[in-house]
Length: 229
Length: 128
Image (cartoon, rainbow over all chains, first blue to last red; front, top):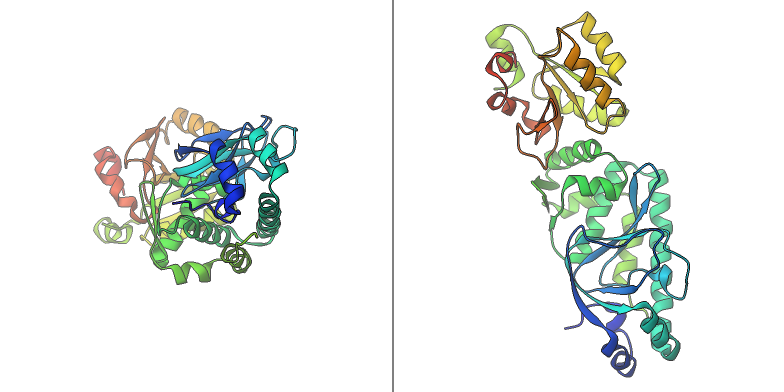
């Protein structure tokens, strides 16, 4: 059953035309799909995986700038452009996706009005996410950003248990691992989460929402209203 | 056994020196360690750490591997006659308790410093 909302929102005839060039793939957590400076070869439509768009600095620091689940595609900045990618795409949560060669997708995009509309709707949603998260990174505390990031991730996988190490969480939040450890310990002491060896469980979602900043309201509502047609 | 319990036993509260340059991380580490009954001292870098240890003895140093002066701190500690035996601990929730990172010990949680007692040399552990 198709779970990617962008694809499932297409007109049947448009999806039927796209279907022959869609390839199901299984993606592993931590897998790098493309790097900064590389030309994108594929467009990915997550089914139950989550892909992170990651900004990588010259000194080795990195931070997630966008999160893509079954609501969208990765990477929208590659569509219709020929310049090398600015950011890297990495798999945060492993799972299934459909992928299509970039040139095949762009060819079908020219022919399909419903695909164009879906893409525009998602682009607006994605820009909202990027802009809200960039403001969040400026104004809000690491504790708040950690809480909202967990909520956004849990919303996408529809699970309260997240298989991820604190080292990778630090890479996503753009903070040191020691900082994640401090915040995770506070959240664990408060009963909001539990963590053991690469497995994080949201123990009290309401409490985690109170720990998150106002940005969750904006981003979560955006998620719930995802209908691009 | 927590630091405060050990105090009752030995009459001394073990001192843990936290070396961390980022204020909010250092404060969080301090709160977690103090909750377990240990005396805490703070330093932002290797220079402050050595300045403190010249004034007072420490029983354990808690730091992090991404500290900018981590390699310098470890090298200076290794060569220091009085401090080379002081255990250095890095909290790493994804590691096994007692695993090593160079000369440092890894510990999975701030919440249980005393779990180090099972992996440290007994002559060092008895001070904790």
